[in-house]
Amino acid sequence: MSFPLLDPLKRFDFTPRRRYATTIPRVRALADISLPVYMRTPEPPAWHPPMPDDRLDATRILRRLKTLKRALDDIDAQARRLARWQARRDFRRQQPNSRPGRIDPMRPGWPPGRRKRPRYEIDDILRECHSLAVMKPPDTS
Image (tube, rainbow, N blue to C red; front, side, top):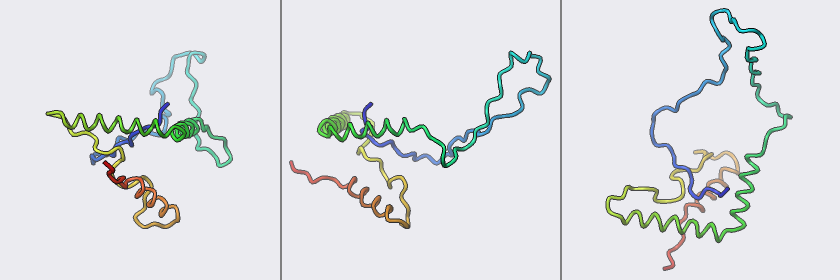
């Protein structure tokens, strides 16, 4: 797996997101079921939220951490990937009748988890990290 080079775009439409049911219907049929017992499907177990001492599956987060470590170990290859993406973007923008695409690999707007009124020390750290991430490097050409 490769680390995502671009942040996912924000949703700018204001239509409400579709909500899905979180419960399972308990009524299977309104009439008497004529299937024999051995042919009926068993009732699915009810979902219970995990308790604080329960073990959780961490394979997805471990996969993300391994991918991040691999990307940070080979930072030169990631810089070449970003340069290739920028070259393709610049080439597409120079073409006639080209549609406007992504301008920046960073997601526009505030970072996820930002508070308007910082309450904790982590809020200040997040603000500083975001300002470092969106700061443009000086043009040395």
